[in-house]
Image (cartoon, rainbow, N blue to C red):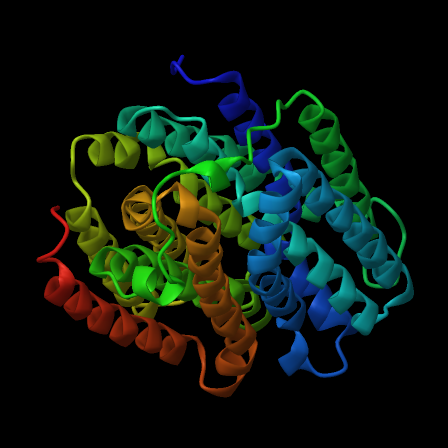
Length: 392
């Protein structure tokens, strides 16, 4: 077992429980959206709205935690998500698309609070080695969410009779969120007295202009953006357009989310060994491979290999970017720098997810993959240009 503090293990567990609502929505949002949306082009709007909610809540979540503490902040997010699942349940029972959007928005709000968990882990990790181990633990714990979330979505589809299905999925999701709240009662609130630190607090723009911040925040944002674009479009392309079954689609999404977190065992080890920018470059090269695989065909194996590679590429980008970020700020600056980092990440993700439905219906799955490939190549060139400042 990793030699980490009790708080780190608790936050990793809480994050994994909380994220099941998000991973369930990855599967359910598009499929329920197709059934109840006024137009097919709006099918991915709930997933996009969920990510918009995350983007909107990133700065308030960080600043609220600075004011009231990490524990109360995490509890606030979980209660908001519970309200969101209740609204989503009612929308499934009444086929109310617009109520579903509100529920998705609230679930997205909670994701912003939950994402702060990785910064709590940093605060409870005394050394760079433990920091990498803590990030690895948090991502590995999310394997629970990767497996259970889509399973809840698929199993709950017909658990309770409803016009479009999936009402039971939200009952299951709410139950997991209640469990997360119970686990949170065991967490010991960390100090929020960082304002007593002696280091000077720089303007946020000065922090953001540093090459290390640009690489860390930019790579995380880019990784989330491409991942959201392809992942959000996949259930529509695979199930609605290519005619593959809901079971096959569920398996591909589950495999993708597992691939997002399982490689953390290796990527965390490599980060501890000092590999940073080289892992970011490797992640971008893998993203190029995703496009090549997806363009090659629309069979189940093509979707599966492309989505698994997408998860691996995201993992390398996210783990490394998270480990790089603390080098850009001091304790006085952390809440504002972390808020900006997450705002950039989830705004990019929201734009990508928001456009995924329109793009896949308007220009097709293959064109979506071409967009991802070109964007990956451009960011790879940018990283190579900036890499002279940090060491890989």
